[in-house]
Length: 99
Image 1 (cartoon, rainbow, N blue to C red):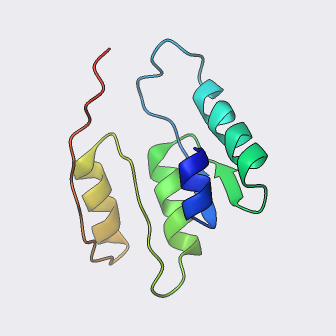
Image 2 (cartoon, rainbow, N blue to C red; image 1 turned 135 degrees about the vertical axis):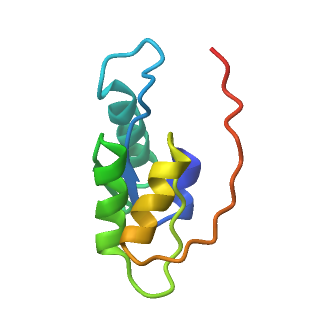
C-alpha cells in the first residue's frame, strides 16, 4: 500500500473474493489506513466490489492516465473494459500467493 501510494495520485482499493481468513472490508481498511499514514495527499477510495471499483476508476480516468488493476477474474475484467470501449494494454502476471 505504501509503495502504491507513493507511485499514484489516486487509488481505488477493492478486495479479492478470498479474504484469506479476514473479515470482509478488513484488508481494504488496513490498506487505506497505510496509504493515509504514508501518503496523505494520495486520494484513496474503498470500493469493495471489483467490478464497481474498476468502473469507478474508469469513470474518473483522464486522458493519458495509467491504471493498474489487480484482478480476480481476467475474463470479467476484459469484458468490462470492452464494454467501456477501452483498449487495454494488458500485462498479465499470474498470482503467486498460495495459502
